[in-house]
Length: 95
Image (cartoon, rainbow, N blue to C red; front, top):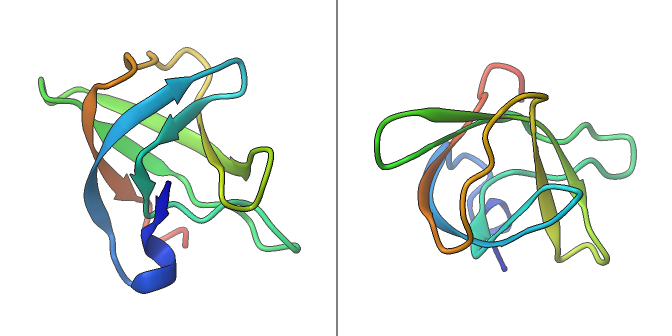
């Protein structure tokens, strides 16, 4: 997983692909979302699908390591399929 926020803290959107879907949430090939860590809250925002619909992300946490970022959709939000291309958008005002 490429952690783009480490390269550019001001990036607000990017393209990504879903690499896995599990009981905790969504894993991507790259992300701009910072995970909750050391008292710093994780990012929220939305993923835009190819059809224009949105998947709201209510939390971002680390997985089994600090290099694995798990994006947690809000309750009732749809889950994308593994391999699906998305455009990630941060809730910049909240950050």
